[in-house]
Length: 261
Image 1 (tube, rainbow, N blue to C red):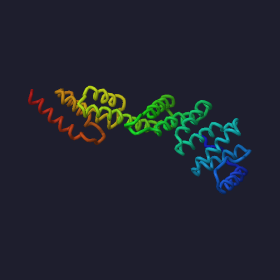
Image 2 (image 1 turned 120 degrees about the horizontal axis):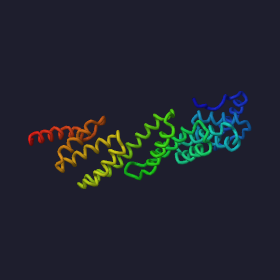
Image 3 (image 1 turned 135 degrees about the vertical axis):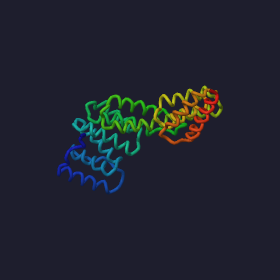
Image 4 (image 1 turned 30 degrees about the vertical axis):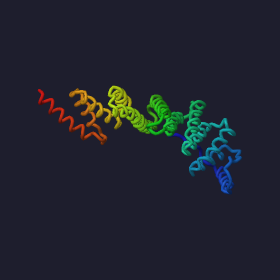
């Protein structure tokens, strides 16, 4: 289990109380001048627990500046990044996670930093129809995390995030396919449909792609291929427009095929 700071001594509690009393007087928050590292870190923790992330980030940053050689510097760096992420400042949070990775390679928070850096990239994603550079960056970083830390407690969380990424990127590529389908440019559409199937399995876009490949095959008179693609689409766990139509087309095409034989 990862450590979460040290025991707060009685003297540290007094210092924290005094600092918080000063803070409550109003005005913009500034880091408090505290000469004891335990008390300084405890104050930052107190602000963090109260979800005052902007204030806590100033205290963690000041801790790192004033007590640079403290053995808990990696923890303070991790908490600084967490403050920024929880305050939704994702670009700067990603930078702080990267500092932890680069400067504190020994830290027990390295696996967290690798995953959360990727999550910060994903949190900057655009709508499916727009550029997905940040989404691809997130996928790359999360894949790297899963490779480097197969036994991390964050693995299940990372796999869930990767599934969300697949959903977004799958939708993006399916939208490209659909634009060609609407103009009956089937060869171009198939390029994107195949990309969805190969790169984003387990998504509704994979199943929709099989359905539309069935439509294309049927249009071209490729009956067996159409039946196969429709069959893959109806085995889906998802409900989507066209699923019942696929069942109907399978029955119809099999009937036509049997009558021909």
